[in-house]
Length: 425
Image (cartoon, rainbow, N blue to C red; front, top):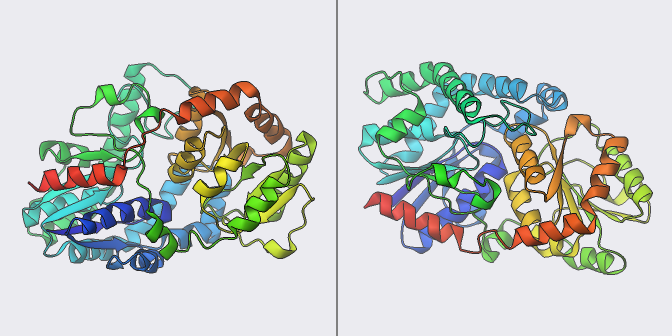
């Protein structure tokens, strides 16, 4: 079977789907991924064929305008910025999705490509499966991510109202671009929302995050929205993309020389003043009397010449699953991949959210009693210190260790591939 997977976004959007693509290829299917131009080489390094699809979102985040939007901590402003980029790229994006999906027997899309993929699948008369990295359909348990402060506990009616507003806004904003695509495909115009289109076609919407993170939600959805857990790359793929090339022996040797450290890192989010953030981490960890392991993967920091105390070690990329079990706690941006790894290792976690669904995950670790949440824009030494101190209490560490046992131990890639193959049948 020929399976096309058009994607766009950052590495966090692409990497878990690469894991699925590799599993489908192992089962004998021909798989083609569409990926942002800056991530095509990342995909092909694993052995999967790929072609450019969508704009370079990472370049947008690193631009002056992107840095201002990130510094403001406003999901709305960042969405406006991304929407403008997508508007400029809309016609090309339409063509690229069509090209990626040409000759496919089945299309697998993501949260940000499912709208275009739905029209392409309709025109081609083939099946579609959508992958969701976070809750993005109407429910009464949780509001639309970013619509309300994450620490609020609104009633069911309010939660549903946020979804109605968000889905209608998405429909209105993208209708022009989607109808241009439909015209190119020879389809009639549509005013329906993407959620309504996929529901009408009975498209499976696979939740590729763990149900333990969203108690109360799985009970509200039927078998069309199964939960599989987070999709992780196997050892060979991780080695191919360089995830295992870090100085793990050096890192673990430093960890073993003292008390387990607190991990600090902010994923692929570009930070404007990396020196100030590093100074803050150095100060807070010294006050608390703990060691700090700082990942510089989120910055252009000169690791060799970083000015830190003896209790701080600044490192480049490393495999989280090899190092996190040796740490005492984790502080990061709340990307679902890093969040899964820190919680799987039983680490109390402080989410310093930047935008999009990250504040929602911050609210969830707080609600579940396994961590805390702090907006990155509010990050100061005075606010960071008590948050990190709370992570290190015996009670918090025990709850985090117990929660780790509830996370799915099954092979999420295999389960998701089963759903994809069932959809084709």
